[in-house]
Length: 142
Image (cartoon, rainbow, N blue to C red; front, side, top):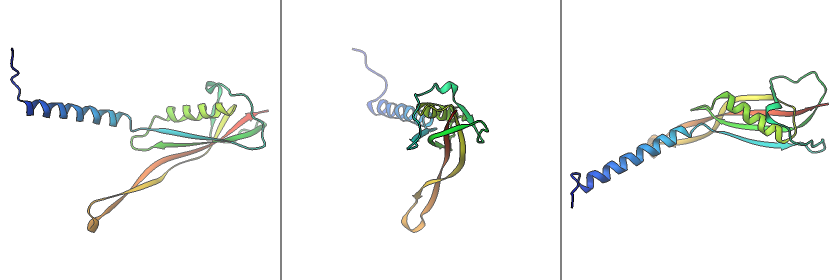
């Protein structure tokens, strides 16, 4: 029978170190996030869903006649921030669910979304948690 040169405690420490390193890498790679909520307006047409590839992301209201179908609210992380292409793709996907031809971004700001306290009771430090908020109006051309 062959004996292992490493002691049990050394093997346990190496296993914990490897597990901790793997968990840290997974945590760092998954920190950027983009969440969305979609609200359809009441009393307007509800067309069939469209293809996300056909939805345009606009920064101003088009002059072409259109009807407003609903809103898309996006919550995105700031540190680390997701690529803007990912945020725009999420806007397209959510707008397509409502049958939109385009989405007009009317609000795009980084703001405080929470806070956390750190330190002992007598010397507490409060840090703000920032997030990116976007609001888009989903439109359908007439």
